[in-house]
Image (tube, rainbow, N blue to C red):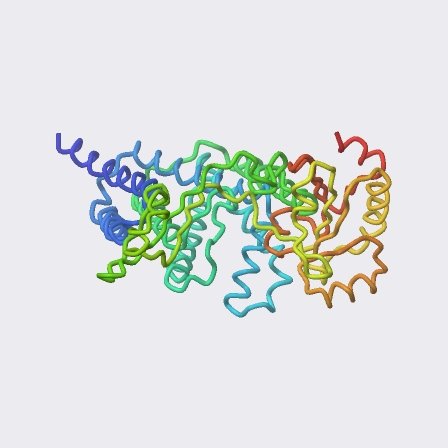
Amino acid sequence: MKKNKKDFIGWLIIAVALLSAVAVYFVEGLMWAFLVLLILNLLYSVIFRKYFSPAAITLSRVLIGALFIFSGFVKAVDPMGTVFKMEEYMVAYGTEWAMPLVPAVAILMITVEFALGFFAILNIKPKFTFAIITLMMAGYTVLTFLDALNNPVSDCGCFGDFIIMSNWQTFYKNLVIDTVLLAILFNFKYVRTRLSGMAQFALGGFIMVMTLGVEIYTYYHLPIMDFLPWKVGSKTVMEERLPVTFFFTCENQETGERKEFPYDDISAQLSDSAWNATWTIVSRRDIDPNPKPHNLRIINDAGDDVTGDYLEVDNPTFIATAYDIERWHSGALPKLTQLYHDATNNGYNFVMLVDEEPQKIEIFVNEHDIEFPVYTGDGTELKMMNRSNPGVTLIQNKTVKHKWSYHNIPDAKGVEMAVE
């Protein structure tokens, strides 16, 4: 009976940690309450460190492994997203000198994270595996706490673009992992491997090589799985819109009282002279329940917003993007020029978008003798539209139909096949 009671306490600590992890994501209004709860639960995992059964430790090990696999996977299929996020950190902390190292560091970090998840579940080199996991979690916990306090970057990118979390949510998530990890470390005697040394080496090496291969491929091409607003199949225009609700704040001319009324409540009063003599509309508030499919605005060389000419038409539109013209692969220019001619000869639209001011665009166009129109687009949105620099995205019938990296820009036959 005493042993069962001890085991129950261990299971309760794990259950509280897991439930808190879910609640933190969905309920942001109770952040400080969660902080107290998670810190207490973390302390309990130390105080009651001998109350965890072998089954509880096995589950904890599998949960941490699964989390590392998931986190590594969503980043491995789109390593450029992690590169961009790390570059944001470099700028935020004034370490731009390290920018050239970011791609290699990002790919290595993702490979290690993904592999550690499998190592934890399969019990490959458990002492080494959990020593690295402990060091990583110590660093992540401190870093995310500083991020939560200072908010240098809005989202750490821990789960790529699949799950977006605030810095406080991310810190709390790490406290949950720390709680489960401590239970494992204090009861490491329950962590045993049945694989031979050779089997561990072979399996571990295969996992790392496979992960690295996927990352390198996606780094030089496009994400294998796209979680961004510009993924293939996404609409560029909300065609079926929900009604917008209007609220009017009115002031009573006699008492100075202010009230907010829904438009439906006062619409009949607007033609009432007695009501108008008493109340005056001072402001309006709109609630639009329709999510924006994107935030891209295309500005031409005259400074006009021509977004609708390219995203709100049914005619096939090829949009070349280069989010950084200082580091773009200029060797792709001949293919882009040929694509421009193939597209326009068939009556299709073609434009290139860059994240620069008109003056720099003019210099860029003259320097490379570019024949096609080059307009301005927000760099962040261009990075989400196409990870390649440059890349090409086909919009047709207000829908993202196809995307190409600079390695496989379509020729005339490819254009014919891509366009319906």
